[in-house]
Image 1 (cartoon, rainbow, N blue to C red):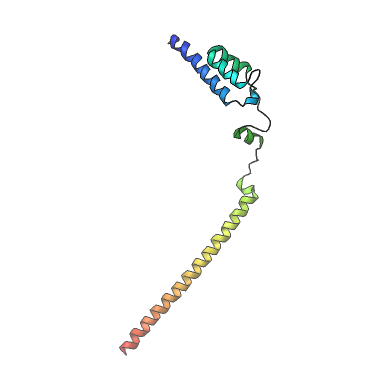
Image 2 (cartoon, one colour; image 1 turned 30 degrees about the horizontal axis):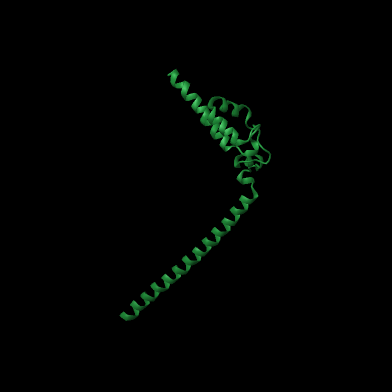
Length: 133
């Protein structure tokens, strides 16, 4: 088990350092150009990987944020509860007005249909009584 660990640990270190070096922007590589760091890591896996992790890269976040997560960290909005958010309350009022108008239209349509149905029933009952007599 210990023998396997002696091969797996340096390999994992090599893979991590290589990928980290490739993903690092050129302007953040220190002491050597990024291409030279890649060559050093590949030619001297253990020493090159440790050298890259120790001295090859700027370790502070650049101003303004280079990645979306860094940008969002620097440009946070304060979250407001829905009942305190004026835009949310305004959208609720607008939805309520739309729903009320729709309900009024449905009620008017229902009344119209009921009246139409009553007229039909009265017309049919009037025809039935008039035909018999």
